Image (cartoon, rainbow, N blue to C red; front, top):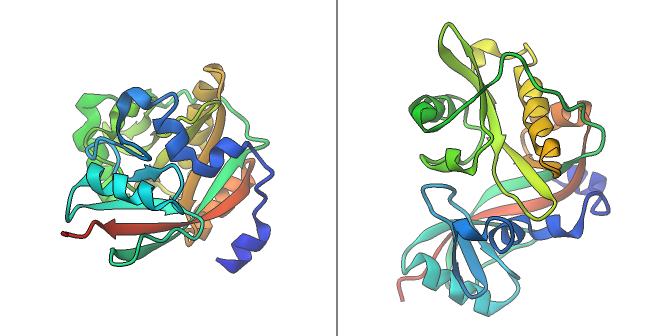
Length: 238
């Protein structure tokens, strides 16, 4: 983590990315948000995290408690983020945010748009590859592309958060039997082509410990913007 922090460059991109989830849920994706004051989230069937306007503000945590309910558990991210005293939490590792600086964006002739009918196969692929959170309704965020071989879904990528001016590429994954063929990079380029065609810029997140993914993204034109902490937090019963 410290080596990654030494390489991060917060001047890349745009300050709106400093709190991308909040910017998305109070901006272009506000119509998808559940919000109480200084806390907001997607429907849990879409994404599991809660965004706070300012994780240093005690009121934001109180609003999150109201939003999630007593005893509820949620994911939250931020640099040095910590809940109030008395709340249980577990670190689920660090994450990195990368922004496009020189990515070649192009459609892929083998990629096909995925929709609701594809969700069972998408969830199976997620279960096998573990790229990060993906829920039964995540596909509703749109822009998911997949590659099939012999009819089976073997790779996919799509869109998730949409802070103003930017769209996140998410759920990039390839079945282990088909890795090493460049399918992930192809899908990232194809999803990015659609994002740019919509007039937006491209960013993404991955786990700080996923050095293979970080190397891949940097090799195709992304640069490390910032390192964040990810927590699983439980609201007190009282």
